[in-house]
Image 1: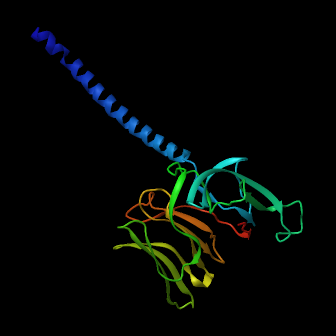
Image 2: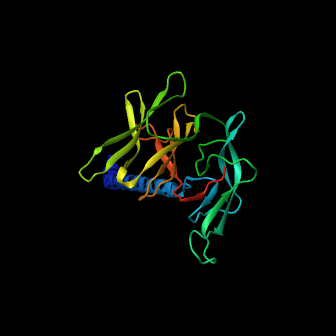
Length: 253
């Protein structure tokens, strides 16, 4: 018995080595496949988009009768509700003389009441009443304070720096909570930029402040941008999740 066992030792060692090598290779392949699966899953994530109702100097695409979530002002507060969005191209003489080239887009929803904005592609947002602290159009030229609950006080502060050698003035907007602060937007004032607060509240219902900020700038893409606290990273207070980069012809109320 002893001799037979000794003769089989090389085969046993070879078999164990094969199993170990196979296990390492299989594990490595599993890690690669896992990473590939994660990348593919990320690529399959729908793009987060926001829209506003109105007529715009640009082409906007959306699937026919596509359902979005709209933040509607109601008598009892702001309500996030599913709604069908209609997008139609139309001719506007301000764009050109060729009536065969439309170039402008009309975004509309059913009914008389228009939402503050529409959003699609973010599964974490659910329909229902949304806590709102401000809704309107307020130029960000001074400090504003908002208290979301008894413990969460936020300050939105606008700063205009000293003139640089080029004769421009830096302008930035910061969100401050306690000892934490974050720049929300910043511009060189030679671009004639100004920012407006359109909405403040808690649309993602995580107990932290969310913002809709509109920046108008002469020489760079701008427009309403949605900032959410639930997607903030690396200690930030907010993350911009989508921006509606447009040039409005007429915004319908």
